[in-house]
Length: 249
Image 1 (cartoon, rainbow, N blue to C red):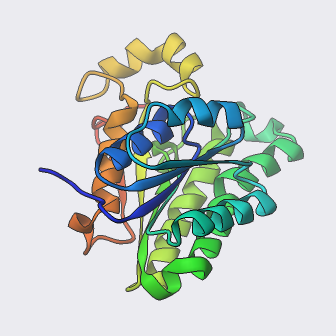
Image 2: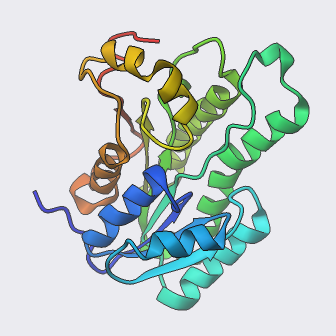
């Protein structure tokens, strides 16, 4: 099935590598004009060289209101519209017991993972989608559905983003669809330590008997962002090889 985004402009945060870059590749190959954003301009420029079609880069921090303002302003100045927003940027500055987390790292996690997606959704709604419609996709995590005893701060933030996704779907319909994708363990730089320490073990207890790759998530994101999903909103699609269904930790 050829899923197309012809004539659409997509903004993707956290898109210089990993899942975000895979999404940008899928979207650009499907006809979208793509704006990719992340913190480091040099990484964005390198990523842009791997993409087809018309691509713009806007460096910025996904937790900074000023940087998010600039992302929307520069996109509207160049393309005049924003049809698809993918909130993919995330941070995980702390791994460990909730009882031991310090306030700065708790606040940083929620600033980027929860507040940032809401602020960007608000800005895109005001700039284009309130009048013209569109699709918002939040990248969450299977950690938002369960606890694992060691990554509670990140998992709390993703659980909050799942609930935010559902709330925005009810608020913004019928103009805008709001959905989420929840990856399991995907082979990215962010998950490198876990892949190296437990990757083989986790894959062995996953029904599909492998860990994910970024394009697994990108393919799901493309579908949910396209007109083929025009009657789907308020949903979070697990892209985890069956790991949650199997009850695997």
